[in-house]
Image 1 (cartoon, helix red, strand yellow):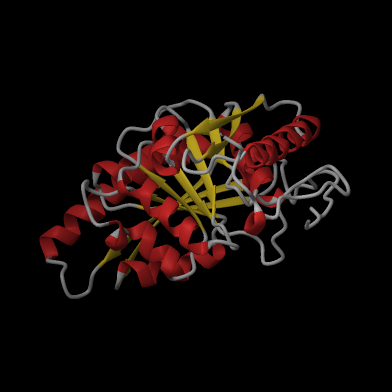
Image 2: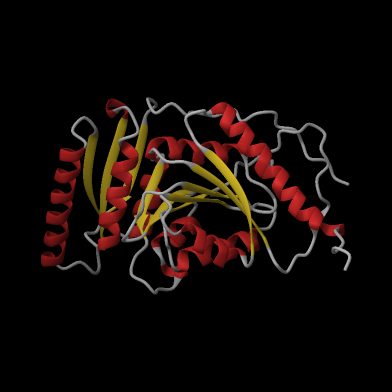
Length: 303
């Protein structure tokens, strides 16, 4: 059997809300972009005002924009920025207009941002044409997609069968602190996979991760559970009412990660964060020397 590498505790890169943070919001006056701005503003309130920055960016397509359309969008942007400054009086709120292709504009500006927040757009729509998916394809790897109606429930961290990195777990916990809510760790046992060993493995990941997060951040209420069913539908159902759903891409099984990501973006029930795993991805575990599951050689449960 393969061995799970030890990672004794989560060592957060930065969990202090006093640290600086720049949130970039895609704004075009649509209902989902208004909701995206509202969600970003709520998150900004968790930071010390003097260190948090919020930037609204309006991309005006050079070939498509008519003068009247552009004037209307600029007016909406100015109004939204003014409202944001009023609700966040000590936070730096910026508003900018760029002329050019929207994905190119945002992927360039995202390099200096800690987080990019976009609306889910009109539904139904082809996921592959959505701004979030196009930004993902361009390498923007910290994006939150917000639907028109966002709730204020817990933060939900999706734990795939290959686990989740300590960095993404720490990031999810930090968002729970900023939003003032609890953190739920959730994995799905696919009904098509009848293996008790696999479910035991998932439960050990969740238990270890929850214990470490509780010890590192006592201010966050952490819970965990395993669902049974088809992953996309299960996560979509559970995410209703959540403040944020956190999904880390699966570097070991990219096709499964793509299916889950696009499945959640097809009908976004809650703000959904798309994160890239660290380059040196290792799934979290806090039990030194514990054996992992050799998924290539797992046998089904006996009848």
